[in-house]
Length: 186
Image (cartoon, rainbow, N blue to C red):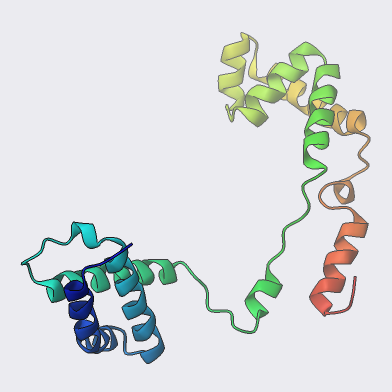
């Protein structure tokens, strides 16, 4: 993109003022230099928006201010972690198995008696109280409690779960994550 030589010269003449303004706003010489550079790049790319005869320095200061505000908004969401210590504390369990677990749960739910499945889904999945579920099904509250209890005991059997250790990440995954947190190779 070509820029008129006079506009280019005016931009170059504004550099010291832009740097002083950026430095006064940021109190960081490195950030000030980055702001000025980004301001000039944006101004250069958008010279067609500049109206000749208007105040170029005011236009450049506005661009600089907007660049700085964008930078502050972006940095507000960032976490300072120069040595990586914060990132090392973050964990995410692998989710490759999740969709298979959901399929297994659906299959196990389908094997429950219809009345038990209905009661369990109303109470556990939909969050209805026993009284509300009883009203929906048209049965006494005690019947709903009994159906939910039977379904809750039958469902782990259908899933082949022995207890709480079967829930969550497997032992291999836990060991791999533990070795990473201790700094030893996996």
